[in-house]
Length: 295
Ligand code: BMX
Ligand code: ZN
Image (cartoon, rainbow, N blue to C red; front, top):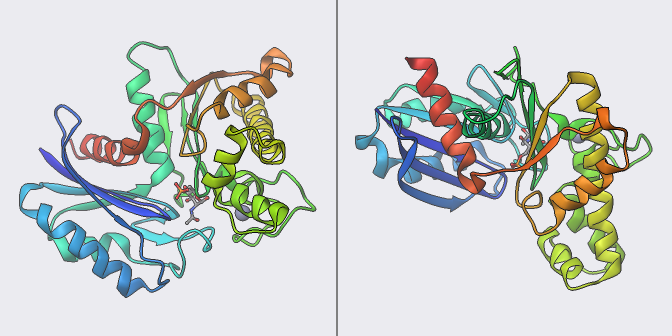
């Protein structure tokens, strides 16, 4: 069968036709996520993005940022995807496409794709996927099963606290790792430090050119992620951690994480792997997860 896969993120929305037998993308298209905070505007953007693909697909599989609870999307951090409190994602898309529609969290979907790409050659039981991008997301595979959670929450590691006195996160909790180590946070910290508006990407570029203040910001981010990995490894007995996202895949970042982990005792050091499927992991993960659920 052919799946119409959709990946809804804080900055872009991608759609693709995926061949479910080969797990390959036949056709792909992408738009910027509307920043309007209005559900009707998001629905309209989704309708025009998806319409050209509908006739060629058998079902729709969505990977979206935010918590997906029974097809209903709520932003845990409304700063990343504004105004979406209880957005009826599956109903809306079903209405647009008239196709069977399923949805899951974006990082959970990516975790599943990374897992099935790795597992034929590796004996991985307990894997964590971490995306460091606009936010920090995660997906857990425990005993070879993806954990989505009864309320869709499982894997939301971006909202574990690294500094109880830290800045207030959009989720309402103080000092979440997402608020201090994500791409957005890197941009915010850089903007404060340099007294000029910088994106995370710009701060990263400065670090790569040798600016030591910028490099310190990147290092603190990687150090925080390494602590999180150590905490979760000793909690869940992880054997592997896959690092993805635009920051996670940026030059040297994964290497810094490894350096910070190397300072810790062996039990805290899982196998660190760079994500293999890059920007398409959400699309491909949702397609294969729901193709499997259907059969
Ligand atoms: C946030 C949260 C997660 C998401 C993660 C990464 C929202 C809107 N999103 O922690 O659900 O998985 O960001 O998202 O609350 P990304 O858009 O950075 O990939
Ligand atoms: Zn938070």
